[in-house]
Length: 180
Image (tube, rainbow, N blue to C red; front, top):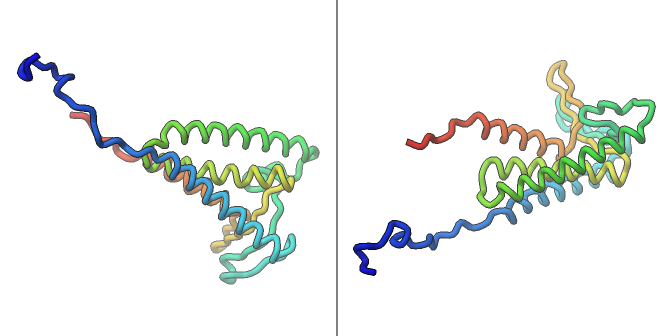
């Protein structure tokens, strides 16, 4: 067959610029979140017995040691059946981690805002799941107060979950390129 009679398929050579799979980096971000969460919780537990605090910025920021047996913002912590709540939260967390793993595996081939967001959420979810399984509670230690508003105590894992969720929202509402 002469070169002038080649079809479009035959004339386009396969791309030699293979996109490098970024899933390893995405999982490394999750692992970094888990590691940072474990280290900070360990330091707090070793340095501040439960209930004690260390003021960093008077009236604004303290480090404390709070054992959260409930869900986010200590919801369900004062329930009549704490074991039932714990098992439900563990089951929910396991399902969330599995779904996040699947989503990250699917979109993680390329590095994007969504990939980073899912990696942060996965690391945070796993960090809190670890606490809930091993200790029966989640260690929270960051306490923020601005004027009269007091945020419930939180930790590095919680922070990464929130940052990841905000990044996903940015991705959702970011204008998408149009094909013209």
